Image (cartoon, rainbow, N blue to C red; front, top):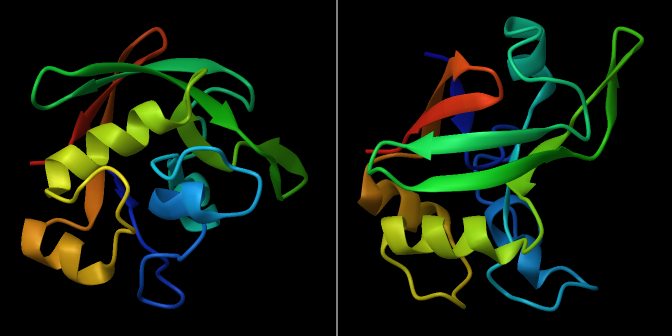
Length: 139
């Protein structure tokens, strides 16, 4: 199962206004807004793992939770336009509220690296099920 990191590998920290803390950036109306980044490393190592940018996917989590998500943003890798992130479809805070509950932080708190360390997991392992369904393991 490939892993999606929940922090910036480059800076070894959770971003202040992106990723899990997207809601803290300007223009967002809910502090719990969040996304999971699709890094160039992940996409190069796992080509065609996810469908194209703009595609909906169903994430089925290890605890039985199901979240309808969307592959958003764009980044070009080797001349191919790829999605940049996974966010909940419609209400961008659905994924953020879910991850905050799992990690054990209050809904409007900024997530920091020590929160992931205390949870003992700073990544989500993903696998393909079928169609647009993917299994997300975060235990």
